[in-house]
Image (cartoon, rainbow, N blue to C red; front, side, top):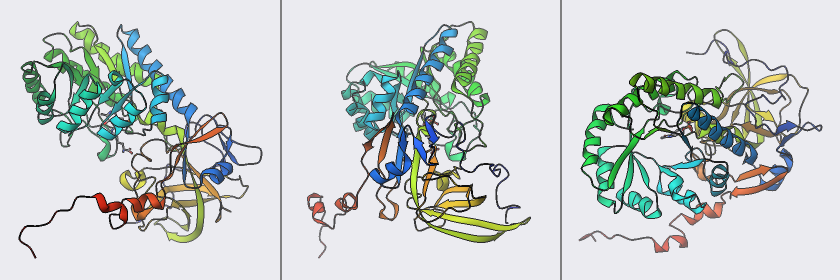
Length: 475
Ligand code: LLP
């Protein structure tokens, strides 16, 4: 069934298709007098000339500002109710040693969920006691490695993991159990994580049984509960409801007093397009902490220490991907209520550097970056250079109608879950990540080369040290 109109209802025709929408671009992005885009003092064309395209430009000061604001917002909200807040940056959003340093310098801790993320955080010099460890299937080796590195607290997702942890622990370990609050957050199904029919976490019943089991392990100490209801969630209702439910369980497990720590996860939604209305972190922090405080007051207990894990809200808006336009193709499209032109604008990246549109139907926006234009806005779909038609970067946008081959295009809000979800589909090397701050740009993650890709191809000389297995008794 075709849609009634070519453009979705949420997208309006901009009065100025060169304008940078507030909240969608980093605070230090602007149009220079020449008309080109400047990112924290650097001209987009010069960035593209120096680092090539595609390139993910990450505004260091935006990340730092947001990290500091998050630490302050949650700490202030907690202090109003006589407790403390520990805020972790969820490294899965985007992690490199530079980013780990920025966020820790601004007062955040770092949450990792794999040996690779742990290695990056440790390599950055993050103190092991400031690292949280998540994941629903941590191996015995991974758990041992984390404890050997000096982590003192582990978030446990299920019974098997708990038993592995008990088996590898050689000293005291704080355990935080991840529970399902049963809140079905309003977000894409793949991003909702606190309803029963998915892989993460323990039901309240199972958590109660595991709490009793933990008491029997001499080295394990149950210090709290964790809940994360999902990602890119707008509004405060889901967070409030979930926080209240989990605190009730915590009071039950603590025998009338809450366990010392309540970790309420991340998931705070950000604006990807002008149509999104994101709640500011201070408002969210107050609403969530107020909800927990109400439950605590009703139960007549003091609030436990709180923890939060924003990822996207720290790094998302700091990222802008620059692409070079390679072809422009107008197509006549018939919708049920109109027939019109959709112009396909193909760029030199795509689903390998931003899988989110293909994975979640995520919406983005775009602007010409090398110039501005007086041409009337035209409806476009920005697509990549990969071999499938679902390779969409920006599904619906209005760009100046004279967009052409060779233009530089900027797609904002690519700082979270783009580099971290990137792939080598079609043997496309992954782009560099370049940090910009006050007029200086430097590479924080090197771009891949074709040589990097060939180095993994075991048909070449580099594969000669790989193991070989020979079957028994076959000719
Ligand atoms: N804490 C836990 C336990 C998590 O699983 C996550 C995200 C976060 C915190 C941070 O959530 P955030 O504040 O960034 O929403 N690839 C998807 C997002 C997956 C989120 C996974 N967990 C996307 O591109 O939208």
